[in-house]
Length: 272
Image 1 (spheres, rainbow, N blue to C red):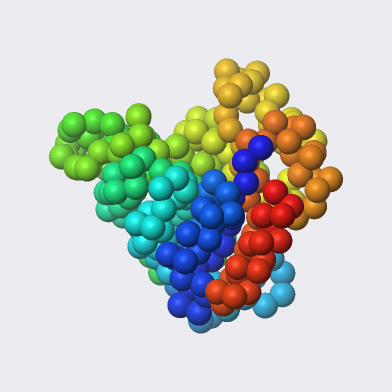
Image 2 (cartoon, helix red, strand yellow):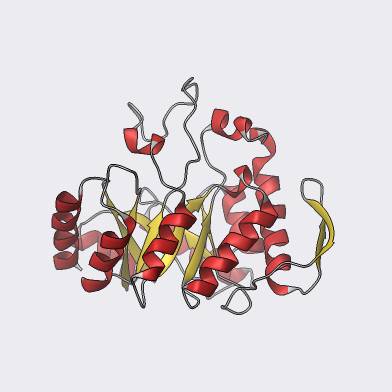
């Protein structure tokens, strides 16, 4: 089983370059960076983690800028979004950002996507929360078209454009793998129809991981990789993930200053 790190990078935490070097030096294979364009001051939507929203949600760097800095100082580290809020993004710009990062990194991008949870944040981008899942499904299809076709076009209910030229194309063939976040029935349907890998969170029971594996196989997709996002640093739990056929787990690195982050990475590395 492979091991990576999931975290938020902000203006107050360890910066992308030293973090990336530390991860590669300690043998982690990947880094998954969260995305929030902003946090509305209203705070109407409850924080899904419960309690007060941690301050680092408000201060998160753009993931593609941060991952580009990480690409420049590493050779093998996989560069992932965990997750990109594509529903708040222009799909053509997003296609170019992902493909550009894949090019400059030599094909090291894992593209994690999700529907998000902060409804005010979505609305500020003009996204209707009730239809965000259907929007994301179309966006994934449109992204893959742009990445793989010389003249891409897409005509859906939410995404619609006539033939376009868009380069660069990704280094990875046919495109960077799309990691679908979420565990709901709609998220799993998205995984089956549009995803290349699954990104469940740590509250997902081992029995459910096994059930989803069996369900995917019954539907003609037996080899979908699973990466657990923010897995507990517990040896027994890690053994259960491995037994369930999980390809990778990521430990959640609580955002903090460089010295604190490096100390925590040493602890994760020892467990790994």
